[in-house]
Length: 106
Image 1 (tube, helix red, strand yellow):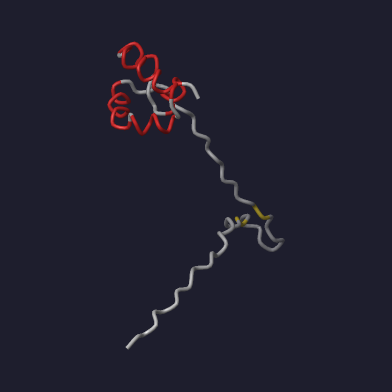
Image 2 (cartoon, rainbow, N blue to C red):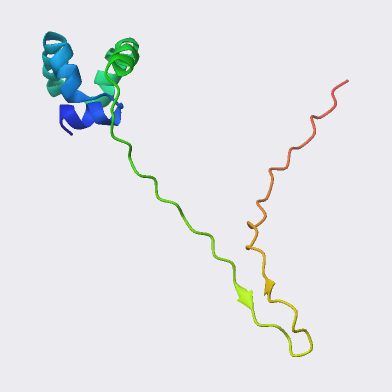
């Protein structure tokens, strides 16, 4: 991962940040190249939000919309009104943990 991709993942416009704060951008780039992205995030955690507010990323990432399709069942010969729609399958039941009662001590 390079520094520009990291900034875009944090919703910061890299070009505007470089033009507005060239010294800070360069020092962050040097620090980023010397450490893991997670370590960089932890180190600069309190500084990322003010930069994000000053240089927001203009691009909107398209979000995939999943279409929900219902199955249509053909009408029965005697029923010519409308096709029936089957409901989506429900989630399988998950077993819950069983807790043993505390032993009584007297």
